[in-house]
Length: 219
Image 1 (cartoon, one colour):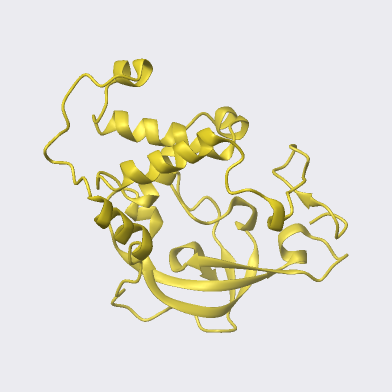
Image 2 (cartoon, one colour; image 1 turned 30 degrees about the vertical axis):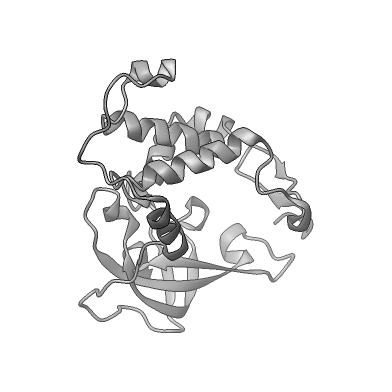
């Protein structure tokens, strides 16, 4: 937030001018709709999880990631996963024509199953087996550079101090789920003041971010 009016983007990339939500279309172009469908359809094959899908998009060259639009990054990530899991060849990707046969190992859902999957989603709650380290009202510090892999802690909040306002229980930890190690960690809602995040004293805005226990230290 800059001056209480403009929404700031990533450092050096200027301001963001978002479309008003009531008039923003779900898809701006027809190809975005197709990329969205492709991402969901390939995800239902069961060859990767949601965090691996996110990490595939993030593993582009930083300049390409920032230059691409939202659904361009989805497309790049899906192509990477299809190639890495040997579901298609590079030649098939470039030509747009299938050369092999569908692997019998793939879980290809029926239309009925696909609708069920989309409507129910995947459960994220997990039994952690330990007591939470933090209590409501605790002041916590967000660790810097927690991992070089996939993480769900925003860069702009690392190194900042916040306050625990809610404990959500145990949930799948993205940072290990991306390696195929599905385990749970305690998840908290943490409140940050604008002064803690950006050193601003102009407004008293607050931001609430859900953060997993390994990201945090007691201040």
